[in-house]
Image (cartoon, rainbow, N blue to C red; front, side, top):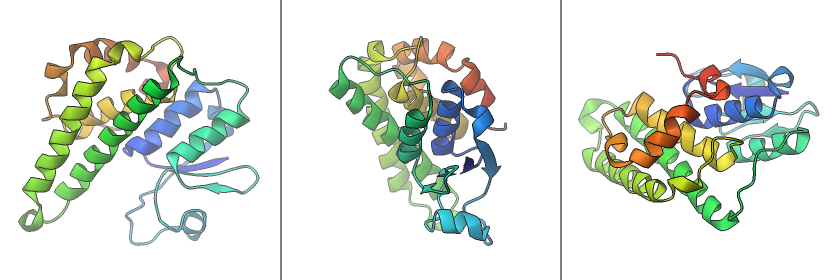
Length: 200
């Protein structure tokens, strides 16, 4: 299987962590790509005409252009399974909120790449407020996160918090979320997380 990705995308990192947690690293070839490049390989655009990463091309030649699709597929193809929480709906809610942190953080990063004269500060403020509200909610439910056998929600949460540290270190999520910090600190030391750290 071929995974189109890069080393800084949080959505790609989520998949790369799952690949390692499922023991599939030897079956997935990672091809690094810049989806914003002016010229992109035709085979990548054929797999994902939206030019987004991650995109997985399966060993059957099927193209999966979304991290959720990819993770679902990998779990079905692996002998291992990520853990499933007892309270399905509470966990699903946490997963959506953690995914929202990723989306808001990435939106902020992309906004700040625009020419300074057209960066919209009110938009950045709105994204930061959304991130902090989401962190507050996850803090209240931090006891539902696990370290022993992490599931998709745990991985999404860990990658989201790591991305805040990486790209938006000015957002003070740690000061308002001590329970999340307690969970995240050892989670970030997992081999799958260490192997997928973005370059400094």
